[in-house]
Amino acid sequence: MINVTDYIEAAREKVDPKTWCYFEGGAGDEATLRANAAAWERWQLRPRMLVDVSELTTSTTLLGTEVSTPLGIAPFAMQRLLDPAGEVATARAAAAAGTLLCVSTLTTSTHAEIGAAGTGPRWFQLYVLTDRQRTLDHMHEAREAGYSALVLTVDVPYLGRRERDLRLGFENPPPDLDLPYANLFETTPALSWRDLEWIRSEMPLPLVVKGILTREDAELAVEHGVDAIWVSNHGGRQLDGVPAGLEALPEVAEAVAGRAEVYVDGGIRRGTDVLKALALGARAAFAGRAFACALAVDGENGVAHALSLLSEEIRLALGLLGCTSPEQVGRAHVQPTPS
Image (cartoon, rainbow, N blue to C red):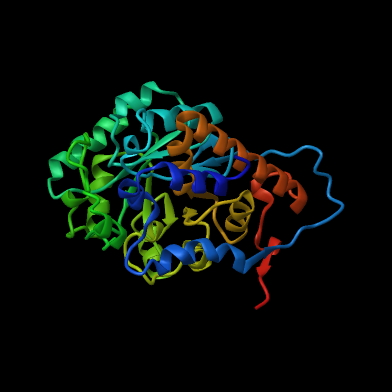
């Protein structure tokens, strides 16, 4: 395995199609799923020459927490379908690499188990459930387990229609799989901006809102005091036909205007993708499927190796771009690919 695409192809061959459809597929005609991957090719890097890059770093900070690279592991659900250790294996690899890990509400491991796997930087992703007390209990358990930020996902009032799952008969969730905190069918369609105020009153951790794609919602999020906005279309798994994360990023970053940190996900396969995200206004990027594939192929070692591959690609690309740190990457470092 010499790149993330190798892991993707190997995972497709290894995992039962009736399970892999859940991790690989998207909603509807999967137009947004394809757009996520294609968007990166629509931007070119603009390297600067004769810059001293003999000493460079890939480290940065996210909401005040130092991380080894501006690429984090996005939340992806039900990891024990891919490896017996599931989220624990992913957490060990992330902690060893100093990479930020965001853990899904749909985890198959408890927060205590994940916390015992390593002391690396961790955020927890939250779905607000129809049962508010269970939501509250989950928030407090995560905080007690050492998570340093809450990532509220706002793009699942209803579950997207994922036709690969329907064709192959994937049961969501599988009946024999333990989910300690919730499943997607327990989320509430009544979620509104007022709920951010409720979460703020109950949880003092920094608040990230994940699933924003428009300047209007970005401005509302800032007005409601969020600490960061995560540009995401849920990996193309919710509303098909929306923009790729990278396509929505410049609009959101312009609206935020430095008042909150901005992140993006969707289709990341290379370290150069991360630099394009930084140049278009993100402070960091996140990948999910890339690490799901690595976990499926070789468990903890696979995730660790994928992290190492992408980290080295980021380091090399920084140097060749003429930058010595992620903070130096700016809008002047990209241009649209000629049509």
